[in-house]
Amino acid sequence: MSGRVLQLVIHYDGTDFSGWQVQPDARTVQGTLESVLARLCGAPVRVTGAGRTDAGVHARGQAAGVEVPPHWTPDRLRHVLNAQLPGDVYVAAAHEMHPEFHARYSATSRRYSYTVGVDETARSPFRQRWEWPVPKPIDSDALAWCATALLGEHQFFGFAVRGTAPESDDHRCEVRLARWRAVPGGLVFDVEANRFLHHMVRFLVGTMIEVATHQRQREEFAALIAAASNDEVSPPAPACGLCLEQVTYPPALYRTA
Image 1 (tube, rainbow, N blue to C red):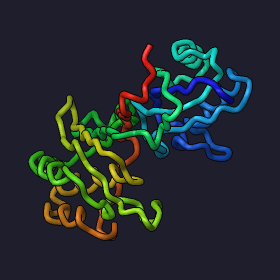
Image 2 (image 1 turned 30 degrees about the vertical axis):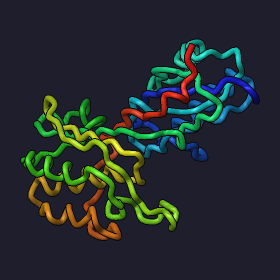
Image 3 (image 1 turned 90 degrees about the vertical axis):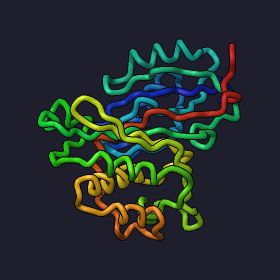
Image 4 (image 1 turned 135 degrees about the vertical axis):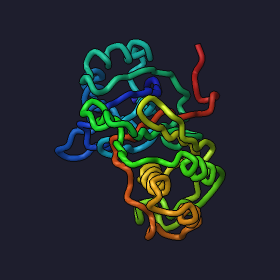
């Protein structure tokens, strides 16, 4: 099919999805979008995501690439999609892109947030869908120290699921933003990098929280940044607190009016 190449910016509540990627007999975000687009376009439409979020992970800025018939302008497609998608998926924006655009490989950075609930009401079912309740006292100075240690380029073997990347992959990521900030009732970790490894943010948060609750030492966290394996990493933080916030592309890939 030769048509318009579009980028869709997607919000979704990942709670009731088995992740982004299409799976047999499972409800996924990609599968939901492809099903609706196939009905609208009268033929299968491949939806390529910027990243494959896991089951339970949310998004406020997932980017997806699609090619649709020329009569589907970005605004019209967005409007009709939102009328037919289920309530836990929403297309926040649609942009026409140049043909060389690829949702995954054209991205120059991705930004995630992770929310930790620290007050008593973090255990409320209305918050546990979006936050990780941590009832123990948290050392904010330790969190800040860990975040600063992440900045720059490192090989993140210590914070990645073993065997999910090709053997030739050097696991090198350039972390451009890493900070903890206070919000009402909790803390949010913001992190941006040129790429992320499988479970990387959740491993980072799980380990930082153990440092900040004095279950681990700062030196152990520093050693993991330089480690050649994930043997000593803490358990990953739950998926519910993680949200894909933004994917960035070169401005030259956007078609202007």
